[in-house]
Amino acid sequence: MKFAVILGDLLPRRILKALLIGLSGAMAVAPCHAQDRVLLAGEAELPLSVVEVQQPRAVLLWLPSEHGVQEGQRRVAEALAARGIETWLADPFAAWMLPVSESSLMELPVDGLAQAIEAAAAQAPAPLLVVSHDRGSVPALEALRRWQLSHPGDARVRGALLVTPNLYLQTPDPGQPARLSAVTRQTNLPLFLIQPELSTTALRLPELLEALGGARVYWRGVPEARDRFFFRSDATAEELAQADRLPGWMAQGVQRLLRENVPAAAAVAESAPVERPELPRQRGLVAVGGRPLPPALALPGLDGKAHDLVALRGKVVLVNFWASWCPPCVHEMPSMQQLWSDWGGRGFEILAVNLGEKETAMRDFVARHKLGFPILLDPARAAAKAWQIYAYPTSFLIDRQGRVRLAVAGGVDWNEPSVRASIRALLDEKGN
Image (cartoon, rainbow, N blue to C red; front, side):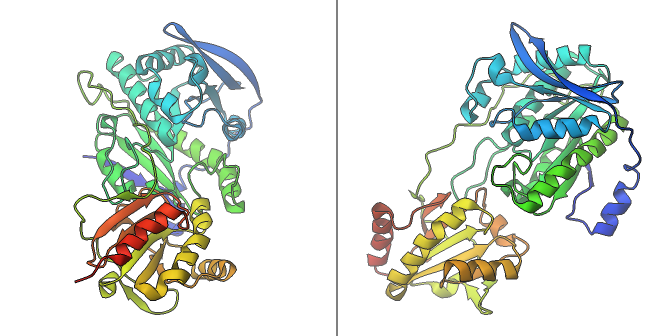
């Protein structure tokens, strides 16, 4: 049975304070400096940038995501050093001579990463934990499991810290469920998750916790932050503030994981086939097979009226899931407004479902962009979950019979001729 201690701001803050009271305390500032090293990972040499600490209480081997080693990671590592935690920033892309990309992440050899973990465990002057984030979470857990199979009960490696863990094989087609990597259910080492609440992965956190049924999992939410919040070039003021808090949360995670017992054996007795994240599919407006009926959509609007998709039967409806902090969402809004202005009188409607933002922020956004179509309020993001939203924005085109005909994950120029032609074809169909 899985046990998760919730440390996030999704709980009332007084409860969060009580949960964390045992994790706080004065920490001595330890002198540190950065140096370059190399870990032998089989025949490869894994470059490290080590933020060294005298007599550390833990060592973090940080495996990057598809974005490679970022300056934000270095800032976090330096702040962790002040808390007595040494960080080894690894560059596996350089070790295996691969360009930094999502496709290269899938090519990283699990055996090589596992050998790097063994070399780090042998050299670390304190207990070792593995860190990763975003899609890097999959190869990190795979390598940990591969190492664990060869080192049952070895207490040198104490678990993993994952920031915005994305353990899905692929962003699915709109409206379809996503598939978690097999390593999710094969993990039993203790984990500490840090989950930004404005990431699509936050919608599926209960699903992830359930899949991690063999592991002891602690987690905390990060309010008002998107994925990559600690190294985004377009970070908001709130995200910058949360990035400053990240080292403290990671230090709390280290303290928690160091208290946990290491499992006597890996969750699966023998090696299973590795499932790596798949290459992204070509994005764009695509036909939805089978013309399925959509989930229910009945929400209040920013205009104070109740809006129900069923009541729009006989019209072509663009259902759009969006947020003002999502750049592609913002970019496509003017072309959506143009569509609505051109075809609103021809049986075309837009229902733009906002993903839980404050009404004041939405009203400012609507006024600034001069939007006239209905904005629906989904404060608990229940509609986003029911409609299987894994990317912002995601849009669906519903025909006059109330069936899903076209969909897209990501932003679209709705004024692009082929896109308008697809919508015009739906408008030209006769309804029942």
